[in-house]
Amino acid sequence: MRRRAALTAAALAAGLVLTGCSGSGSGAGGAELSVSGPYMPQPVSADMAAGFLTITNAGGARDELTSVSSDVAGRVTMHSTVGGTMEEKTSFVVPAHGRLVFASGGNHLMFEGLKRKPVRGQTVTVRLTFAESGTRTVEMPVKSATYNPTTGH
Ligand code: CU
Image (cartoon, rainbow, N blue to C red; front, side, top):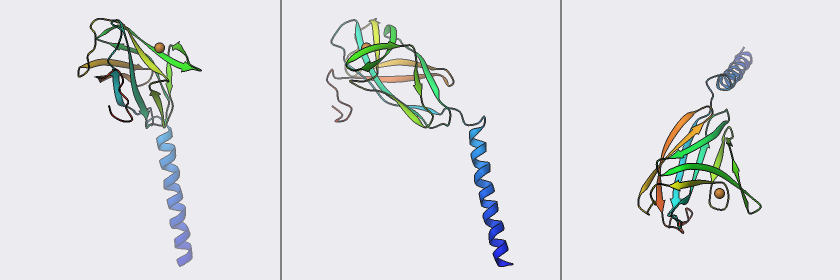
């Protein structure tokens, strides 16, 4: 009798795990995005600037960054860097349970047609539009031209 009760408990536990899995996989489990570490190095040029940030997806479904805009720029384009050559892209995938990283030397945002020159200490408003999650607004601080996010200065 005792052994049978233990088996029943194990079967129940297994059932609960299975239910939890199918629950998160269907419908409710969309992309869950958060943005971290945004910054813009103070631009050297008067009409163009770069921007960096990380988008983390804690959800079980992928999303796609489809456009970026800002109050300081005529337009913001998205670039990847492949073998030292940068290439404009129309979208970037944010993988499920993964990250999309824009970092110096790699993927980056380019702010073109600057309406004012961003200066260190200021903040630039950036709107990110995603295929599934809609629009997110990020306040991007302007750092020194040589800012390194690893060292923090
Ligand atoms: Cu570029």
